Length: 217
Picture (spheres, rainbow, N blue to C red):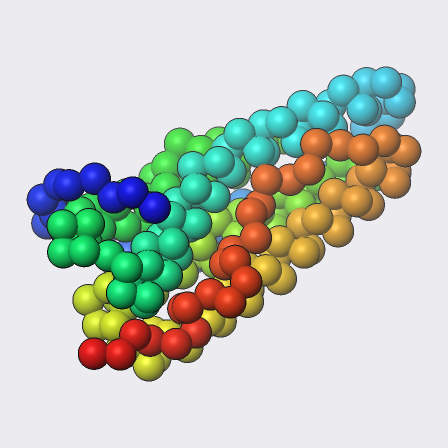
């Protein structure tokens, strides 16, 4: 990973970090609304169902892209640091990069906001995509955001055992929610008897991630 030179910028603590409970409540409410909307029956033709579900998946993946990139970058930064592969010059801009990554997975990001407002069809396949969408919201605003915050802690306190354990748990939750989202997508595929665009939730972290062991020194 190439890290550009830039002086770290001290920023005011983000509002979603100062009001974490409100952010979690907001995510829960979004998921509840999605669930209610997908319970509404909508009789349509198969061709229109397929077109609608394909449109949903295209929008979901577009909205997920900023956070997906951000969490991979954040964990990648920690992996390099844990392996002592970041020079002082490369490490200098990481606070700013991680702050941007944190923003990309919060409700202040346009992609996450748009993701929370996607309307899914009230069809059997649409209900599956509604569950996929709810899971994607957890993947971004809960799993990814917390993992990035753990990396921020570890970059300042690399031997913080609690942060190491927290990051390991968040990585496991990222993987679990990714599996759930893929399962709902496959269920929608079966309902439609087609293959929809795969949901763009990347595997995080890669195998043998260093995040499970804090670097020495």
